[in-house]
Structures are given as C-alpha cells and as structure tokens.
Length: 192
Image (cartoon, rainbow, N blue to C red):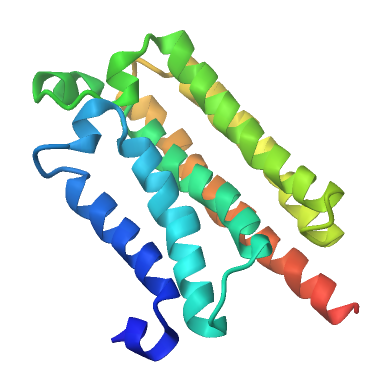
C-alpha cells in the first residue's frame, strides 16, 4: 500500500528489506549461518529502514539520511556482534557460523574497534563534507562509552556473567549516539 501512495521508488528498499529479513535464517542462503548476519542487521536497521522511512515522508531519497543511518546501523550491528560473544559455543554447535564463531578473540575485538571507529569516521566525514551539520559531532561524546565497552569485552571475554554489564553499555552506546545525532540535527535546525 505504501508503494501505491508514495511511488515505485520505495519498492527497491522494501524488496531489499524483505529479502534480508527472509534469507537471514531461511534456506538456501541462511545468511546468519555464513557470517553475514551482522552485515544484514547493519543494512536492515541502518540504511534500509532509514531510507525507507525518509522516502515515505518526502517522496525521494537524499544523502544526509543515508549518512546518518550508517552510524546507527553499525552500532545496532555491534549490539548483535557483542551479544554473540557469550553465545559463541552454542552457536558453533548449532552450525551458526557468526563472525564471532569464525574469528579468534583478538580479531573479534579488532572488529569491534574497527566498527566503532567507522561509526565516528562517518560522522566526522559527514561534517567535513558538509553533508551533516557540525552539531552532529555531539555524537562523538559517546567515545568514552565505546572505550568502556571495549575494555569490558576484552577483560571478560570468557566470563559471560561478568560480560553482561558491558553488553548493556554497548546498547547504551547505540542509544546515546543516536540521541546525540538527533540532538545535533535539532540544534542545527533551530540555530539556522
């Protein structure tokens, strides 16, 4: 129905979302079992969802919402990624070959750092390239939370119960970064 109301441009995002959702676990692709589940989550909860919502409201696509969606998608992906750490043994036994199952501890931790770094680089580049307004740099204030989360993952990688508070911090990292991006956009809009 939304495609009829907004135009065929929404169809591509909708089809991508449906395919990712379905083949996340469904045969023959079973993307989550092939180490692609994290990427699917980043795309589905970042660009696909954001661009779809933007298109429904405006009738077109734009670069700014795409750039804003990338940090959000990466941080949602990191919620899944970090939560896979205590599940890696059970996932491996079930044949669920997530990235965390496939990689050694040091590579998993490096993947976490690289994803957080990519999150902040996208925000900074968005501002430098004048795609995002400078107040969105407020989102960089969450770096301290990313650091705390990383330290907790590193220190308690093999201890699921000690890891739990840091998995909670990881969720807060996503929440606070998103809220600060929104706040930055509001500040930029009000101060025009």
